[in-house]
Image (cartoon, rainbow over all chains, first blue to last red; front, side):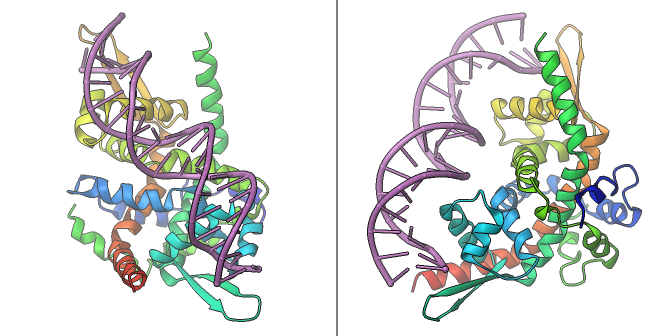
Length: 146
Length: 146
DNA sequence: CTGTATCCCAAGGGATACTG
DNA sequence: CAGTATCCCTTGGGATACAG
């Protein structure tokens, strides 16, 4: 699972079967109310913590502090909020083990796992194109500085 | 391009070739600095306006007010900011036509078009699973109300 | 250990008015 | 037409402290 392997995937040659599938996706933007829906889902999936939690849970179930340690950078507050939001949306399943020190396990639901697919694609895109984006930014900023 | 066709795609049977590809994507979360990168890209791509602009531009080049009208709901302010951010990141190309009433054309760059693929996937997921999410929410909220 | 509550600051984002 | 600037309110999100 080396990150460097990410440089390769589908930048110019985007694994045609996948491209195929994407092209088959109707243009949802132009349907009535699509903007609302897109905005809605994005505000859920689009915040970094949700994605990070989902991606972490992809590897297996985790307890609260395991998640906190794994994601690190996230505050208790945000982890708690994020998990409840994900649970509410049915993406994450919360299981309380009524042992002496209470343990709570978080796991992805099937819905959550299905989300991981497009999310990974986006992550892969981000990783693959980050150099291009940063290059573009520095060029832009340099021109601004004239 | 009927929206209803979106109900179908890959909920339980996620178009296996696509699932295949996603599984082939390395787990970027666990590489050093991955969180920062993901968060960074998400804050760019994750805000609804950016996505909406990209998806609108997918159909063809647009002028400022054409975009404003097409997306509707967006303020001048945000459209302006969003376009500049997208331009800075190299996702959108801005062309000024020095005619009498100044016309500015916005178009997707190759990078922008490549982004549209994962973005569409996410949009399709959102649309396909919205019913499940809303169902889950209402169940969750009802239990809260006990 | 697993949270919830409070405080508080910074960023997001709309409305409006003004400029080239 | 294509913006930039200002004002101002809402939301995101961190730190800390407290509770089951």
